[in-house]
Image (cartoon, rainbow, N blue to C red; front, side, top):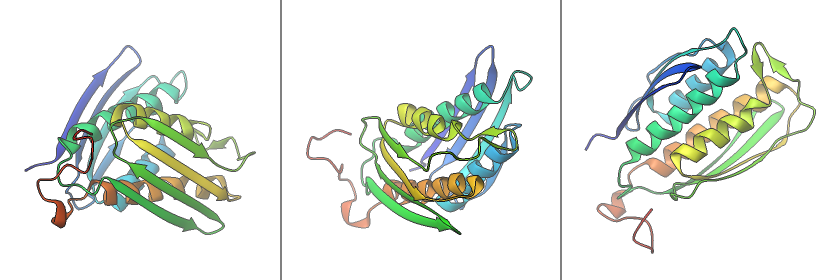
Length: 197
């Protein structure tokens, strides 16, 4: 069964198309107009082994906020759609990723209940190119709300803003990959004692 999600989201501020294949090989085609964000979404697809296509036209003449936020919302919705009924998946995933002096620890539960815990070092450089580093948490909030997952992201230390953000996306990619993969020992089984996710 194909596990593909496709979401189109259009507002007065943005037009977003996201397509994701959870059983892909990490083929990525991303264009949001925000260079560093494109780089992060590329990390998500490649390290998650998700085939990912993202096309966003946003009101960048104002700033990058709406473009980044609306892309994250569409990505979360597409991920949820691709998960389908969640029968036979591992459900839980975690990964710790170092990037030079920075470290990110990510744990995910594809629970159907949106919840985010996010910590990172204070006083990170405010900008990476046109990317506002305060948007990292907002991306995760937006993704979690639409994907309906519980997500814990912890960066205990780091100095370089690029590294601090990038290791979060790499660890997120791997944790999502592990959680969404099919468990060969649980074919046809929903991983929940409640009978619903």
